Length: 116
Image (cartoon, rainbow, N blue to C red; front, top):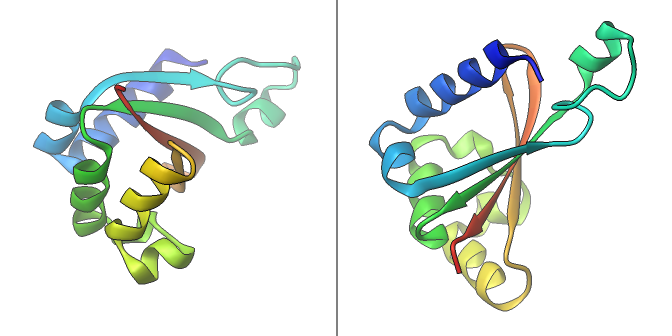
């Protein structure tokens, strides 16, 4: 993955979420064809979605705060029922939630997991 792209994504997250990013996010992992080229075609590589996993201290409070700061990151039932639904599904059904956003025209999917 281009180092400049990762720096721009990190900078964008810090601007979007401010102190929340510094306090909550412990680790970030990039994976998939948007992070590691699987072809020599640079045009195709640049159009691939960048997949990220964010490890956070407290997923429920992270989602609540992110929903307040950038509600457009959430869609579907979560955008209607709020962070309570997300907290319940994360603790009872599936421990990860993913959002799709665009930063500088690059499609990004970030998934949030807790430290447990």
